[in-house]
Image 1 (cartoon, rainbow, N blue to C red):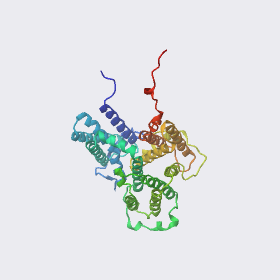
Image 2 (image 1 turned 30 degrees about the horizontal axis):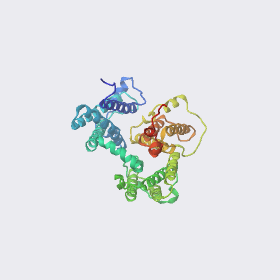
Image 3 (image 1 turned 90 degrees about the vertical axis):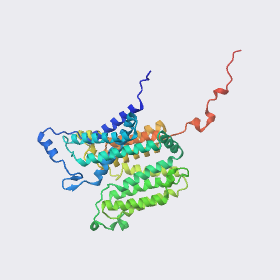
Image 4 (image 1 turned 135 degrees about the horizontal axis):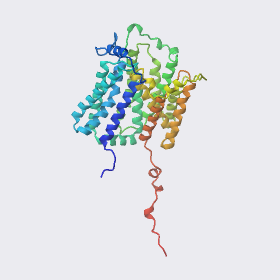
Amino acid sequence: MSDGGKSPRQYRGVFLAALSAFVAYNTFLPFRFYTAWSKIRRQIGEIEPIPFRHGHQWVSLTDILGNILLFIPIGAAAWYFFYGKKGEKSKAVVWSLGYGFALSIFIEITQIFLRYRVTSIHDVLMNSLGALLGAFIAAHLYICHGRRGWAYFVAHLKKYPEALAGLLLLLYILFYQLLPFDFSFNAHSFAMKSLNPYSWLSGRQRLEDFFMLGSMALALGILSGYPLKGSRLRHILTPTLLLALFATTEAIHLLMFSRALDVYRLLALGGAFWAGRHLKHDRKRALKSALLINIVFAYVYPFEFVMGPFPEIDQVLKMLTPFYYYYKTTSIWNLWDMAHALLNGGMIAYLMGPGRRGSVLSLILIVLLESMQLILRYRIPDITDVLMATTGVLLMGLLWQTESPQARNPLTKKRTDERAPATRA
């Protein structure tokens, strides 16, 4: 008899449907449809027949990468679903590509009837490429590791949690460094004015970058200083390689922005990483201090408090609508904002401690910090940040394995097997 539960393939189907609905929801915001046929016909006439062109300009690299990355999870989820249904890895890749293509076509056709949206051919091409890449990644992981991959990950996480945390921080730092992924190099606009030390911390954005990158690099240096002899990640978290990556990403960042050389970024990354790497005592407290500095600058900077005017009801509804402020663009900036909120949630969960109590305190602190945006200049509260940070807390709770008191001290176990049975006289 069936126990009424769902099979693994059904769970994969539900996850694929939920992921597809999330992408469609994010794309259709703010759900303002055209009703006049003249405006719909104008939307159709504005479809660019030449891929990667919009008007008289080429599409930005940011938009291209954003469309690819957006559909990589779709392709991976589709592969696991179709592999469970078809049972063949190669056919599952083809079906995943077809699913990504069909979903992208549906989204682009629907965008004809939506305001603030533009239908384009290159979006379909890049979405399909992203789905194909996601399917290949899922197939490769399954073929190489299969079910043992998750067991290896869990074992590695229990033995070397610092290595995996350091890898996540490194990936985020590189992601942060390479934004906005647009090449616009112009030799005439290149300047070396940032070599002037007085300009390194001038400006609100530069000071924020300095402290946020510095605190993350300090935490990365502390994490890479833990013993990682048996971990494969020890080849990545080496000082020489990390400093070379920092310098390379700053050089690429220079070409992308076509602006002055930001020496303060290299100082923040290299100096803080070196300090954290050579820290020998009280590493845990130093790590928490670095994460606390990052959270403070992420939520409270520039520390300019204002009292009113408070938002009106229509603005409050926008703040309470998930992903509302993402509708103006589907670029990689949105993905970075989501990753940033996820990382903040994980940091807060680590500071609050493990267990249910720590998770509850983390959620309360996230809501309080986001509500504080109401009285800060240049800030807008957004329910999206709360949801993503909450997801970070939940992921941290799942990955943060703690030992029970009985596992730490076997003497606390109840030794019922050694008790003599009760007898009556």
